[in-house]
Amino acid sequence: MADSKSIAAVIVAAGRGERAGSPEDGPKQYRPIGGHAVLTHTLRVFLSHPAVNTVSVVIHPDDHELYQAAIANLKVTKPLHPVDGGSTRQQSVLQGLEALRQEAPDIVLIHDGVRPFIDAALIDAVLEPLLKGTAAALPVVPLTDTIKRATTDKTVGETVPRADLRAAQTPQGFAYDQILDVHRRAATETDHAFTDDSSIAEWAGIDVALVAGNTGNVKLTVARDIEMADRELDRALPDVRTGNGYDVHALVAGDFVTLCGVRIDHDQALSGHSDADVGLHALTDALLATCSAGDIGDHFPPTDPQWKGAESRIFLNRAAEIVSEAGGSILNVDITLICEAPKIGPHRQAMRQKLAELLQLDFERCSVKATTNETIGFVGRREGIAAIATASVVYGGHQ
Image 1 (tube, rainbow, N blue to C red):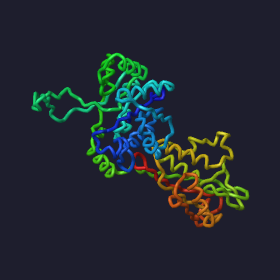
Image 2: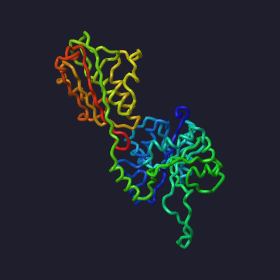
Image 3: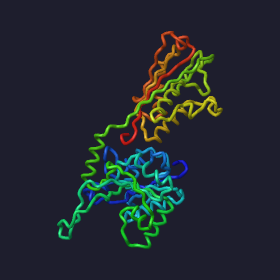
Image 4: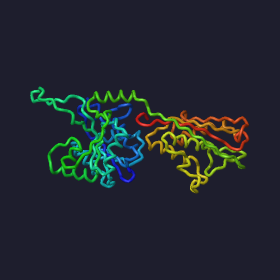
């Protein structure tokens, strides 16, 4: 259903964060947690979500260098617009919404940049009613503490029943045209200081649907919050996934083979629709397996004439892009070539270097090995060459 509607996100990150510690530490959205800025963690979730097409990041006019540093390690594969914010959150959100006018999305998600523990499941939960035509959706969690109303002399005035009370979170989702219109109206028709965007929708008479929030989706407000978030990320287990790939091609009459991107003179050639590089083909499948993206034949069908004679680096590069778009970072790759001839040893280091160049990995993270089939089977009879590949990829925050 998401494919039929365009979806954008406005990430609000223009605050000064006066309660988050010493001014010299900088705004809280740029403080490091888990080795990266708070804002980096937040943006990574939205940039990697398949339903989100565009992200507008509202920043303080003085923070452009901090912002560039925060996005330096992100894999940006969709439009990412930095927008200067205003003196209040409400003004900043309006600036972010205005910046999306050219894209004119159907739906917009508005999220606090200092909620770095947002996850794809909560984004999906907010989107669900919006994709069905609801104008506004708000994630909430029940209050667990007893609520007291204080008097002016700092004594308890009353205990407030909490059964119907909920704490509002972000992302808050809206039909884009409607929330842009009511934000514009609120800017000119009232002096009320709205603390979130669902409040503006309520003011305009828009029904706001409630969806279950996530207690882990905390807003980092004071210095202790940031310290706790840093410890939490240090304890978190990284999402490391391993994929395997296998490929085989027949040997025919010829004078060279291409293995792992390296041309080797030989008294036979590999037969295939492309250059028949079994090593890169197996590795392409291994990378795709880490994010359940099918196999090489799904993306580059042998029936398609445009891939006839194509260099297999094209396939491998696309697989690496798919991994990146899914929020993954390749840790290491390993290929085992199975053949009686040619000898792989003299070319192994060149193959490792080629893998490092193609995948932009360190040389020591690229492994190539070889073995024979002890003259057994089709490999042993020099009728073909096979390859087995393994790739390890980390997804999410620990990149």
